Image (cartoon, rainbow, N blue to C red):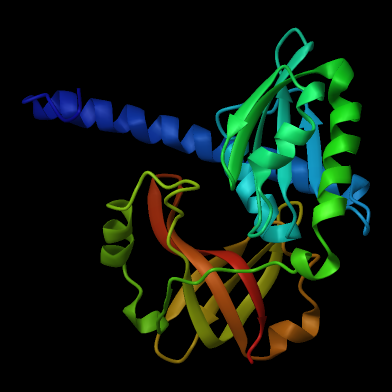
Length: 267
């Protein structure tokens, strides 16, 4: 109705409703990401070539997005599974890395699944709870057969390097024209070189907040689940940072910020 109504009051009301729903989705996305990273930290072994996780209250509508974030973090093909309310069936979503055909891998372990589908880089599945461990072991076995240690080095795509002085709310609005983003249309990733992380501090459970400063401009930044991944000495030297541009909406205020995809000492 937002695009069809001629009534400005109705348009404003519908827009507010959509903003509220989007904020709830973002909060759900972040909660599942935090839980999945914690679970991976407790279960992922160094020799594992893939990651398969499951939980009772993971919403199937967002686990694909979270799986993509885990691939970025751990550099491994990843499946997340959320169990239905009755607990017997689970729906899963997976994302892959370059060189690993996710659909082909599922075909090889299809006897453990109720159904599956997808393509090389993204796939979905339905599984019974009592087959989960069998599937997990079988999928890790296929990944172990096809992937070597060199394949697991995380690769970060950067679409555009730019000085922070060129980052603006107008740029963020332009990026929205590329939505919806997903496996076939990934969200744009920006890069900045030689930036300082000013005022870095740990927030929440394991998040890192700071201000990026490259001399041409400054930009608030947040690294979700990065606080324990960044050595303190990194924060005292220039950094190369890959990030997605987003609006941080809090208590009715919107602030432009960088959502860190990866960072490291400047090369």
